[in-house]
Image (cartoon, rainbow, N blue to C red; front, top):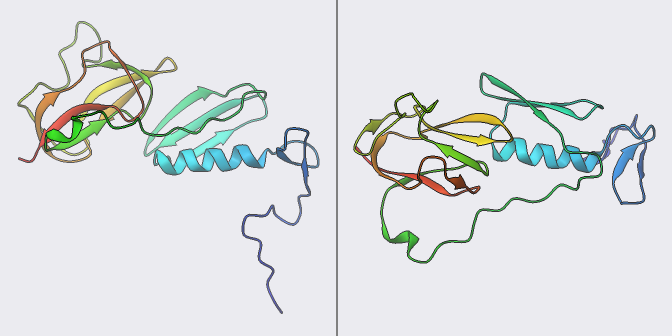
Amino acid sequence: MKKKDTKGKAPAALKVVKDGNGNGHDEQGGIDFEAVRVLARIATEFDLAEIEADREGRVRVRRGGAEVAVAAPSPAARPIALSPPAPVEGAGEKDGIFISSPFVGTFYRAPSPEAPTFVEAGQSVRKGQVVCIVEAMKLMNEIEAESEGKIAEILVQNGEHVEYGQHLFRLTRV
């Protein structure tokens, strides 16, 4: 018995119909397959363990052991593709390992205004150590070092707006 190639197709129990905007939904209009594809790409890009969305527009994501609730865009909103910023002229002059922002948001060096900063220039950091917070959509997201190193340079000022992919710290090997 031959198996049918079902790669990229909806399960046999669901009949996919296209709406006027070209979006694929099941017959009851409940599953937007294009939205599922976009969520899958986001999950892969940000190494998310789980994304759960309900029909009321609430979305819950889990990265590793942490769980965060976020509000979903309205059904009329169209997904946009995020791409890293264009390279800045002269940006490749310095060697090192960079810690970049995974979000558009506001950069904070400390957990609160009166608390000490997470790291200082010249300090050694270990993989997984929290180095700053990027506030995105009113959520405080801890940014961790992805490798061991020494903070050679802090590239952003506290409270400054940062873009997706923007370098926040430059590390050197220890």
